Length: 327
Image 1 (cartoon, rainbow, N blue to C red):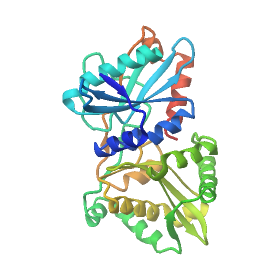
Image 2 (image 1 turned 90 degrees about the horizontal axis):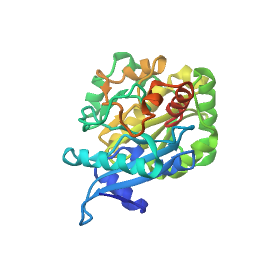
Image 3 (image 1 turned 120 degrees about the vertical axis):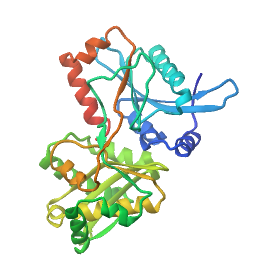
């Protein structure tokens, strides 16, 4: 059966102890809860109360007549033996409580056997193709996996008159967001208003790590990570023109990677690959791409096929969700 968790520390402890993804932490659900989603933290338990799995399920209202969409980002956290039971109970839960048109899951794994009744939809929310570095490798091995040009730019940009440090104050974060807006004007991607990022900074607490490269005491680039016990996940980042000229993103990312390794994390996820120069940059950091399993849907409504085939309104809403679930 399922049991709701109402205790933040208890939930985070379970997620961290069982290798959960940062997007399954309490703070991510709180962030989404004040930005158009509802967060449900659910345990799979037996009659004695022993916990066998956990899932943070996000629910968002959809335009009429679709009711709602339920979504588990980079989860659930459950072993193979209990997976089928948990997925079926989660589907029943969101159907009964929210009349959801479907339950979508995007596990943080490369192989996954979903039980009968789950399908592979055309639409996805988070990218399934990414770069994930194995931080259990030593520094020399990580460097050896990179393209020669990446290693060269790391050395060159690190030799510039820059300093790299953690962003700790709202004032410093505001300067980073100004860079983000500049990057957005240049690259043309969807972003939230600034309050969303201030909320993310506050609600993720120590699980949000923002690094910035400074020249003359002013940030010229930043990189924002969400971290759990095992995984570091890139959320946002950007550079101004000086940062571009100095290629400071190479030194900045290498600094973040080494910090995560120092903290004992095992994986560094680049947050997905998309078309264009950003992916070209990311591909220089590893010899291989990682293909996560992607999205599984459990249809819960007769209207699911209509939704998934992409009515104009549905397509617009799907694109909006894709743009704003992470960015």
